[in-house]
Length: 97
Image 1 (cartoon, rainbow, N blue to C red):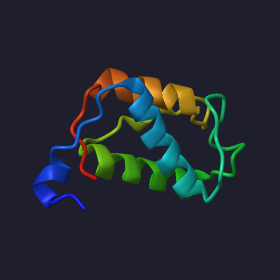
Image 2 (cartoon, rainbow, N blue to C red):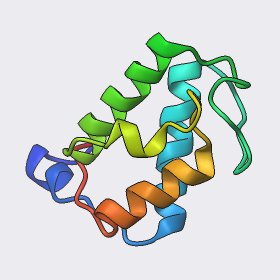
Image 3 (cartoon, rainbow, N blue to C red):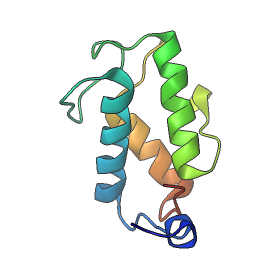
Image 4 (cartoon, helix red, strand yellow):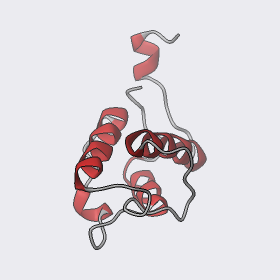
């Protein structure tokens, strides 16, 4: 188990690692077993409450506010877009896991 200092210094080094972590958070929030790059939040069973839970979990993990307005398109979030936007905003991030 990592100490709190080691955990705070954990870093995602590439987009693939980011994709894996976002997938984990997405599945945890929606209580589902599988997602793919083409997944969209509403089709996977999401709603407005679970969307807010998703953003809260992302903010906790990345330690920064994720811009809700950039990610939500027509009331929905697409997994690939989410990963792309987060990488552009905080690529090579330190994580609060």
